[in-house]
Amino acid sequence: MPVYEYFCRKCEKPFTATMHVAEHETEVPECPTCGRKEEVERWMSSFTAKTSRKSTGY
Ligand SMILES: [Zn+2]
Image 1 (spheres, rainbow, N blue to C red):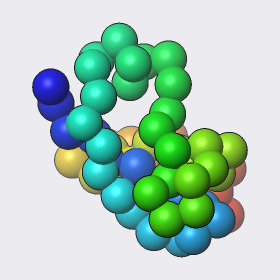
Image 2 (image 1 turned 30 degrees about the vertical axis):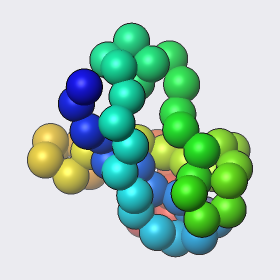
Image 3 (image 1 turned 45 degrees about the vertical axis):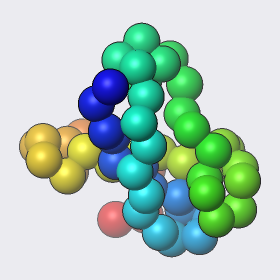
Image 4 (image 1 turned 120 degrees about the vertical axis):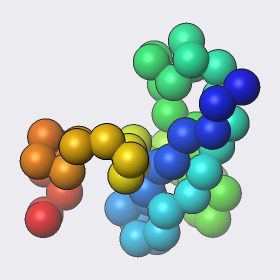
């Protein structure tokens, strides 16, 4: 399974999660620090996603 990068806005920490592609398309993992999903967003540092990221305050 591929490893994806995520970022928790609550903890302000990035983390990685191994997920199926289908899971990655439809859901996000829980933050390993706070255990919440609500503040987790995809963090695709290897792609040109920085300009298309959602409202994160940047
Ligand atoms: Zn967190």
